[in-house]
Image (cartoon, rainbow, N blue to C red):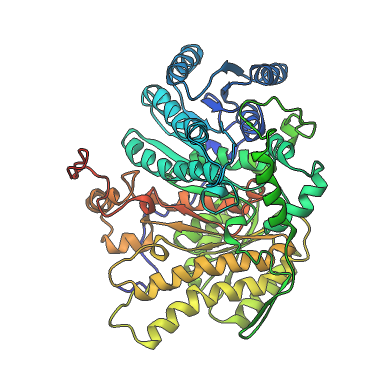
Length: 617
């Protein structure tokens, strides 16, 4: 099946988005009336998450073994009229988890539980030469079994509630990458990534989403304590070389991502591990490439980065007799000032894009249109770049009638000169461009019958077209101070094999890698570049394949997702806007699956027709 990108689809479900349609996530009180538990909430990422949730209206319980730090945090937040309580809990003790969860829920206003954030952690690191059984037990009991204990304890109370419920587990870049003398910790974090996907599948029938976030080099008490370099500036200089953003990430940035995944803006995101890592996982051992030279096939390494040497020092320190059981330590950390409402980025308010300027390619229909609507309603000046002038002008007229600032330019993104000319014309009227969302797409799918013209058409729009737009916008984005961002539309087709999809899926796979390369090259200009991978979205293309009959096809296509339904264009737009926003300030070179859990499922699907009984399958 070939669906032309310039086809005007008859799509009755594509009504204009209004402010009333925005979920509560777009307002500062998005967690008003919600109830949450955060393990390891007395310090570090857990503390930042407690503060963010409480400031945005949630009733929050801190579960931590450090009672002095936990009680102090409660006193500080309660003094600011926030609803926070503390329970001394060792997550390794399942009975302790169950009793404490029950006590908290009995006192909560909702008589149930909406959110769980598992951020408790044991950071003991041992390599294969020195590891003992007790090292494995400590790491796995806290980082894996402890997370399971908390999910099991919270599950009965989460299932009582209707609406969206969510769990976020804390994984780590160490769960994806090999690091010296870090075997026990890294293994436990890899276990969390796999466990999260399994939890997501098993709890999906109860409407509970489960995701993880994957930090790298966060400025926390733990990092400060274990490092031979005690100053933040010194650590930034060394470890900053390991991240595209050239600095350590912040606990508040991790908390922003966690709260996004908990919120209704992530309503179709489950079974996903979201790197909040400053581009760490997308980099190879040559790092930022500033000490490498590529000249044809002549590739030379001219120097070594200091970051690797520091990481080695950290691992050696963890093995010393002063090695850290960070889970148990009470750490004085002067840089961890209380979060106030004034510290919340504008992303937490409905006008988070006020004064910003964005270009959305393919913005006349589908995901592109939903993104235009969301950006404009939240205050941005938006230009639609699309080949379909009839649809584009109609969308512009509809949104302008609502008092929104929307422009239209007829642009074929495969024409580089037209891209450059149109971007220049738009910027002359706005003086800047902060964001680019590459949503244009050609949906031709060919396989054994593919001709060169099919390959050329697909790649000229889906790959070269994206490159053309980035090149056209770069001169204007690079001049701006502050956060600038690009989001490309990839697809589950870039990750998975689909029948007769050689041309389309190949182009989407290309976008995944191109996004990472763009992120690395533009990082020095403080331009973040990410992608989103949708699955089966109810939009013009899927509607056309279904003959417009969603009622008939949703029961067939819905089970391809853990959430048991097709995703909506507005949900993809929510994820795009999150990645564009300052709430994603340390996320770059990442592909965010907005796929209802599709990519984490195997060919056995939801598993309802399979039976596992020990080894008898």
